[in-house]
Length: 114
Image (cartoon, rainbow, N blue to C red; front, side, top):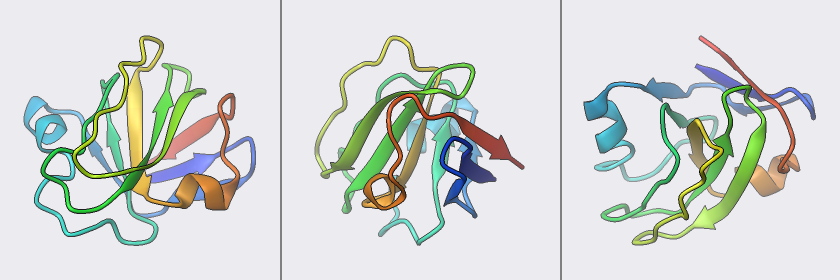
């Protein structure tokens, strides 16, 4: 899966994957040593995340059903929890620093390609 910030014309994830089943959403990024550049995980549906038992920080982009960013968490450290985002339909988890490096902001529109 590819995740693109259509507002800014930049690719956020070139080799991401989707987590749509209960098992895939529950497992998330657990058991990984990190996210490779260009990697990502789109958890759908999802309105809140945690990094318990993870060994690396991530960026998290919360999007509504239209793909508009409604909340961002930059470089969330391991053993933390995001707030619950009522407007969010899905969360895109990315390598730490991706949001800052791409200038991604709340209100930007994302597009996803398989």
